[in-house]
Image (cartoon, rainbow, N blue to C red; front, side):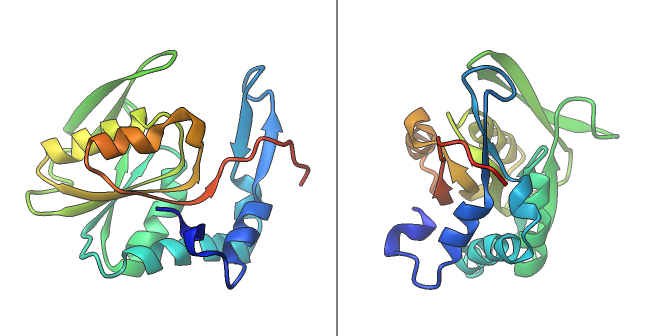
Length: 192
C-alpha cells in the first residue's frame, strides 16, 4: 500500500516528494541516490512524513518500532513516541554493547549483518520495521527474520521511498508482510 493511492487531497505526499533530492552517480557511477537529508531540512515535510506513518499505524497495537541503521533511526523514534511503542535499533555488526542476536543476509554486491540486543523484543511484541528506502527488500527481510527469531510478530514494514523496479514489495509479499510507502523513487536529478 502507498500513501498516495487515494490521491493526495491535502498535498502532504507532494510536499514530501518535492522535499527529496536525487543525486546522480552517488555513491558510485550509475546510482541515482535518493537523498532524504533535504526532507529533514523542511520541518513541514518532515512532520508530514511522521504524521502519515502514525496515522496509518496508530490503531495496529504496535509495541515495537524497529529502525534499520542508519536512516531508520531518523524516522523510527518519532513514530514510536507518537504511538506509544518502544524503539529498537537494528545495527550493523559490533555497534551495540552487550549481548546481541544477529541475522546475516546477502546483498547484490556481497553480504551484511544486522544485530539487536538480546531481550529488546519479547514473544508477543507486535513490531513495525522502519527504513528510509526499500529497494530489493534484502535488508528489511533480514530485519523481519531477526525480530521473528526473537519472538516478535512483524505486522508490517514502512518506508519513505520505494524503488519499484527492484521488486522489494514482491519479496515482502512472499513473506506475507505489508509494505506501506509514501513515495516512489525519482530518477531525474534534482537541485535543492
